[in-house]
Image 1 (cartoon, rainbow, N blue to C red):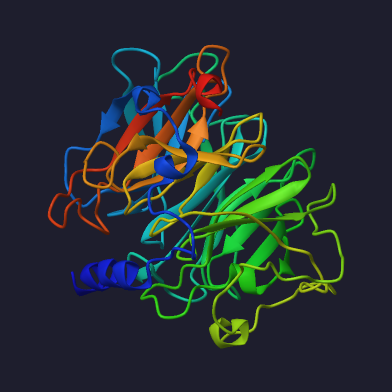
Image 2 (tube, rainbow, N blue to C red):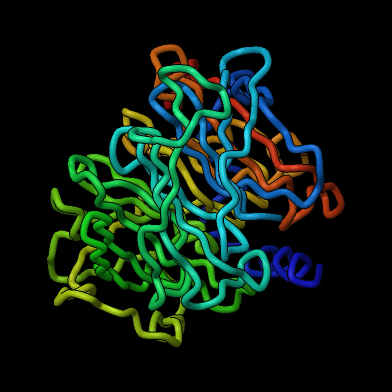
Length: 397
């Protein structure tokens, strides 16, 4: 509880607002009040408090997969998501962990998840993290749940340990490179992992990735996605989205490093973590150009999704909102939730549907306000929500 109170006080004290930036995103961009929020509804909610859904992925058949950070390291599937009665089913409880984090599809219907041990919600235990494969593509396990020819029982296997990295968190797959993923180490670096060969490289470690000094959690680079030749990431307590160019293999395009004008308001050297990222290959991981995409007047920028037109759909966790940002017009607005309301309590990850009938649906998962209760008191079980973005173009997204 002390950390929750401290986090709130730090947010209010530091503000995380730049000079001239208004505190109301909607006011800045003049979004008509009658167009927001977008329609949303609940698909599933756990029955007990203390649950934290951390991340979510969409399968090509329309099902969702979501990872549990608390109280146990479990993977669930949510089926029949477009019906009136979606069904959540536990797929697997991962051994020798306390929580799961990111998930990404590395090949058709084959996913990789990250997990490890924590002292607390955001207090990782160094060297305990690993990557696991979840495969629906080629399984010989007898079907036990939701059985049909198109819905196989998944298989699970550990791919590799990450003993030299502190906080592997967000995962995203490199387009066109089966089994190659980028992984955020939230203490300040970006990893490239080839799960075909178990090759792990630290490919970037720049000031825009490190945690903001003075905050109680080691949470710098967090969410990650690839779009149009760039890797995008959120630096959570900096409330800023960054990007850098990458090549077809997922390596940053080498340039003369140029730190973003708004990267940090403090000496970057003072905020570099006390560990040295391990480099398994000969890579100059500081020789990159980082661009600031957007800074937002919010407490925390968590995970996000990117729609086909490049719009960013950002979850804000303790702010209890989903924010859309149009990169072409620099227009942003809160499209779901509100700081003082419970509808999006602790919303922290998002993904668009992948079928013809739900590609406009943004699925989001929540922590139920577990790390920062709504209005200081309200906490609920974690849940999965669906946001209808079909009106996005009409309001500039």
